[in-house]
Image 1 (cartoon, rainbow, N blue to C red):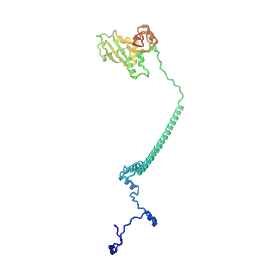
Image 2 (image 1 turned 90 degrees about the vertical axis):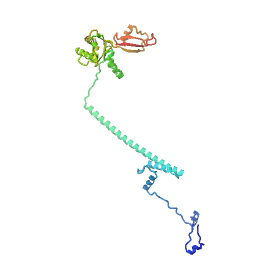
Image 3 (image 1 turned 45 degrees about the vertical axis):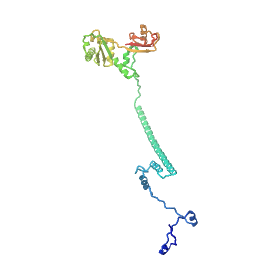
Image 4 (image 1 turned 30 degrees about the horizontal axis):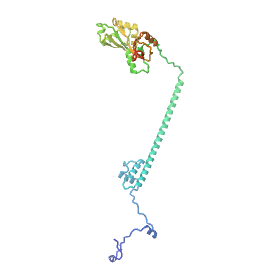
Length: 331
């Protein structure tokens, strides 16, 4: 409510009337020739400390107390763009600034990592170059001090095919052979089967340990003072299976004279039972007859084997007239 000067109470009291006026418009200001200054802005944040406190209080800058970085400022701007009362244009502007700060941070990190990697590679290259140079100098110095000499590698003599048995070939297996198969066949090559001990004889009444000791005693009496028999096992059908300690003893027993002396020392009618091995021959001639003794002799002659090495042959083909696979049993 406004009061005018015509109020008698105001005139009697001697007080100045209070008038309520409206603010001057822009046109009135231009006509009067005066200027209107804008109202003073309310500024609560005056420095970085107050700014950090303001942002941390509203959980816009996290974690509290940590040094500000480009990444944390970008996250803070993202949070501000989501505040209530923020119009779409202002929110997009703040988000755009946030993305630019993140790009600057990523570029700075990539540059730092690249510089660090380049520095490390340069140092590694220098170290390797220095190492190679030192090694070369030491090798040259050693070669100058060492007199020139010619070295000739001694190649062990290779026995001809005719003097090697199948057991010896298994003991010295080729490098490409399966280690487990070579070890198993090596054990088999050191095993011997005795046959002929009569029931009731001294040997037939011994157990494995007694047979081992007896065989070692016999080998010692025959001049074998080195390793002898490793194990001996009586068989159900009047036989003894024993294994030697090493290949040298096995090779000694394979000689006919030594085997005869060893068997005669054990008892009468005792002899070694030859071990047979089954082999499959692929792609043999269609004219091969497994029952023809002449064909066996030709195979032994072509493969540098003894004439009696092959004990038996049989065809495993579905068609007997086309023996494509021939199992061969030979010593």
